[in-house]
Image (cartoon, rainbow, N blue to C red; front, side, top):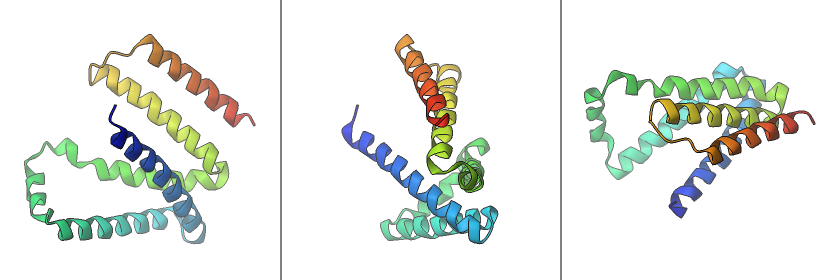
Length: 141
């Protein structure tokens, strides 16, 4: 595996925790839906500026040539932010995030197996079972 890609994935995990924490705190002062809107607007501004600076914005016109199903990712992103902002105040950040990770790992294994035709080894299945057992143990505390 590529070490840079692995470090980027770890960084994405750290940033997910920070973002979820910030949005849940903001959601306490406004509402989870307003916190989601603010998060997405801030993200849009940030990514727009980056694309302007590096000159990628003209490539956006290619978005009209892709299959429409590939254009709904923002719906899921907004849902993730909103659902995190709603669940974290009552569950706590670590409990909410371990449940989010359990959902991600389970659904990604299913997607790999059925949509990507990936071979799911016994080792991966064992790891999945251990992770889910660990999740249950973590939440029982």
